[in-house]
Image (cartoon, rainbow over all chains, first blue to last red; front, side, top):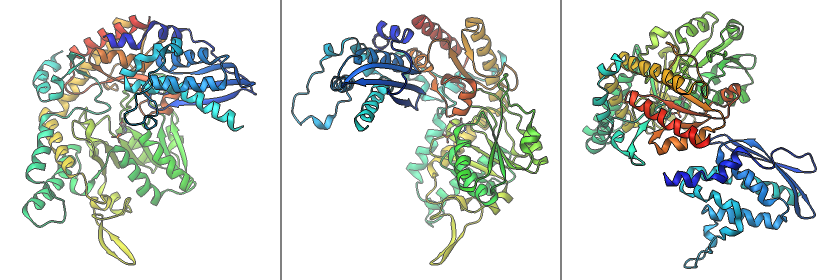
Length: 155
Length: 414
Ligand SMILES: Cc1ncc(COP(=O)(O)O)c(C=O)c1O
């Protein structure tokens, strides 16, 4: 059951039980909603960006330990970061879950190793890789963040 | 548990090869028959034999194997008809892709021909999406009213305002057994009330047909649909049973080959009987498998199946209560004759998805999620449950492992 312990690391259980940055923000914060129809996981992300920096972020919604801890970990990771850094984190996080853009890797080229250190606590979610169905839970908040950032860029 | 021992559980289990497979190094405890029941080797073999010795298209060829394929396909209609107590399977059993398509057929064929704005269709809050969305789609086209039978705190249908809901309604379309709550609804009574109000009744029997004797004439219903893959048959085939006189008056649903009597440049004449609703090459191999599943259940006897699962459900409800008290909540009615072997569990502070994940490491297969019944989940105020559902091959040993695994789950998250 080593895999299961990999999945439910203490950090994940902690963020699930005590989610960080819980709640919602009023406008002008942008709001983005993510939904995982498979299991009913729901993430409501409020994002306040000032001068190209994530000034505040709140997470609401409900769902499984993986989707909710991922949202909590993400909120802690992106707060105070620039939009560019946040986008970089999305890419690195997805890469960790082997969701990199495969087509972008040229044939024969060495895949770029994921810089796990740059992910900090987020690396705790790496155990999800062994549970393919749960990857959607782990990426839900990140896809919602990407959606929020796109909305911001468009407005 | 006399019913269970008489039932030769060990013998039944030997018929299901998948049950001797291992899951994470453990005996597989399959508690997801509500989603799809395992097929016994008799079903698998019947389909393989058909494909190896007979395979041909139906209703066309004149060579021997093609005639045999047609005979077997039409025989499946009769087998299903007999199993359901139909007057004539040949005239009343339509093969679809699944239960969902059967409801789409009722809506698009009967519904479209018979409903208009100002009419009403009555559904219940415990319906599967299969018996909700087709009506909502049709509502968008025709603009009739959809009325909802609510549910009580006991998780049964709230029939207190049924007369009001049925007043002026053209159809009551309702599940026989809830796939989330395990509530068994009083279909014969509902049929009587619907008919008295001048409405027809359509029944979603997906969770009913595999678990207890069912007789469409005794129930006096008008339409009844189910999915053979939930009754130990194959996927890819569904059943719509309808009274012959209703089918005769209904326009075709899907068009193409097989469903016509004649086609000219300026139009077509549809076929008579169930074939009118079976456009294109039908699921022939699957119909052969369905026949085998019917024979398998007939040999066991549906009364015995029902008794076995009833006793097992009582055992499970008692065990869960005495082991966990209120920390594991069951979404469904208390034990009794209206309670099927569907156990929707919620545990405070632990999401159903996590419960199912940990159960999996114990070899226990349950289903987390909303079970395609989102209006019901909203009504219950939960966004997911972990659902264990019983089949003929489950025994008290399965419940015991479920309980062991639930203890481990609570320990891990506690
Ligand atoms: C009550 C009920 N109705 C309808 C269905 C739909 O069955 P299918 O997906 O095979 O069409 C199901 C199965 O999930 C069900 O449980």
